[in-house]
Image (cartoon, rainbow, N blue to C red; front, side, top):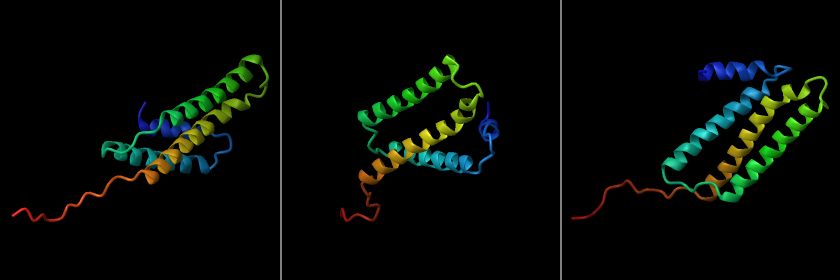
Length: 118
């Protein structure tokens, strides 16, 4: 599936066609691109405790959704409408954490000026 097709799918899955979800996804994608550049330039990777915390929260939410669906506690299928926006919010939360890491550990400035080696 192409990226525009995925974006179309994500935008159509919103039950109330909120204009906030595309903004959240765009902001998180910009953050992911900046984080990719930060890593490529030699920036500090996320700590293991950050990754563990993110995955524990993601698995707890996923487990709660699965338990609710399989136990039959969601007769109206509300969780189907909540899954995509929740994933977008989790993506944004991760990128906010990465933004804080980039601000705490900025890349060293490279002095690209002329040198006096003569």
